[in-house]
Length: 285
Image (cartoon, rainbow, N blue to C red; front, side):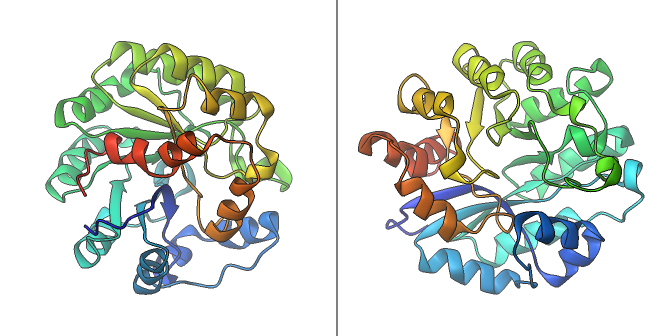
């Protein structure tokens, strides 16, 4: 890994042609919601873009075949990206919690593939509560293998503005369910993705209370960050917050430009952009 890395984007989705096709109608819906077209970007192009910015990226996917019937993108796809561009990419592996032993075996396979965690788990899309004890063997295995989990939290852009929200149910994405997981598995590191509106305060409280619960700032244009979020990451949570864009939903350049206008202390800004993620993933460069 290069010693000149200036930032780590901890929340990135692939948008190559193969992945876009697997997402079905969600690709067009998300483009409409965010007001920008999303032409395919190859893995090589994406790596070059992050490399040019002197950034690393944590790439991930979500699989929800039980709920949607869509054929998932295999975790070998993100693992292949890491193998080809190890100076740029880390990757999380995706599981469908409802598949039981298959999900458990896939977690073990993700470890063998050299992936850095499990995620994005999206309770709203996958229709599960993280604190449902039926899924505890999955979280236990992640803890045992040292694989952090990234959970989507709060409002979902996917399905937003469509009749029925494409079947996505927001009740499952309330952060308080993750609080129980963090309590019951203290050795498991958890990232709660996004500002988790309308439960922002709830997620901030959990991050302050549980040492193993972190937050990323992805999927939300920084100019719209709630004042409560800015205050907390500037003070008590300055070691718990990490830069994430949720690319391609929000462009990295837009996120960076708007984040420059947010009133964050210079020393805290460096922690959010680089140091916290570097420590979280035990990176040395």
